[in-house]
Amino acid sequence: MFRFANPEYLYALIIIPIFIGLHLFLSIQKKKRLALLGNADLVRQLMPMVSEKRSQAKFYLLLCALLVSILLIARPQFGSKLENVKRKGVEVMVALDVSNSMLAQDVEPSRLEKAKMIVSKLIDDMSQDKIGLIVFAGDAYTQIPITSDYISAKMFMPSIKPSLIPIQGTAIGTALDMAIHSFGPAGKAKVGRSIILITDGENHEDDAVEAAKEAAKQGININVIGMGSPQGAPIPIEGTMSFKKDKDGTIVMSKLDEAMCQELAKIGKGVYVRADNSNNALKTIQKQIDSMDKAEVETKMYSEYTEQFQFLAGLVFILLVVELFLLERKNKWLNKIKLFESK
Image: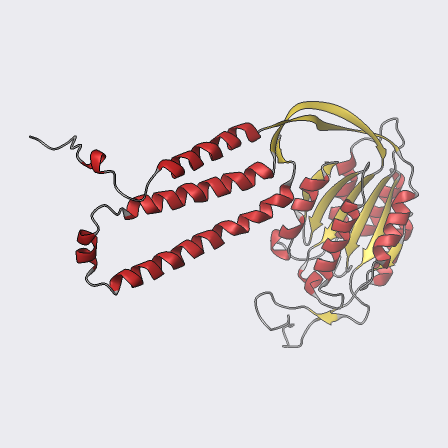
């Protein structure tokens, strides 16, 4: 498995386009100054030993050295030893509603963005547990299988949006069924297992109650975070300043179905909490997870990583040496060599 030990240094890659832009700006300024001296072809004849290609080559060598240096300080590594690691924790599957109604902004910045913040913070606070993610609207898909790889789990968060699910709606029952089967058999270890359902509860079109009963039967509790408000809010249409309207042209108000959310939490022997602009919902869910039975959870992880900086360091050295010895002026001795000219 490949990884960067210090991925935060990759933000320095923003320097690359800035470096290129500065080079282009200086090149344009140089051409303007030369144009003031007269005709470009005549000026080149007056400076026969000056090579524009060599100047460009020196820039690109420095650019490549800078790029490779940034990758170098981020410490690329390859996992060299995969082994089973036992941790004492719980297993959590998050079922996240990504239907269009989650774009409503009665929770800032929107229901969906707030939900993603909650999931990200939940992952940040985990150390021994396993987590997975299911996204759903009119259908459900496993976005992240249950894992202890928190970095990979967080990487998926920015890409989550309603367009992930082509079929709109709110198939909560389908999402709960998928979450139940994501845990696999309980086994001998009585590890605490929980589904965290994050939804506004609108337009559930399958039997969510039966799915919640099945989860309870298997010892999986369901904690529900309600997104939105009972008063409701209009649903923005992405890329426009308009809101979703019904067939009569009236703006649709999306309301949190709090009664349904509370019912699912009660059947699933979990808690229900409504998200607001504070962190109360997250704290309530974290407290619930902390109270669950913890047992040894076995997972495959890379325990040893080998550094891959040697090759990159050597490449940077070669690039800088070549740039150092590559002169901007043409070499008069090399120019005398005419390999392809007949005598």
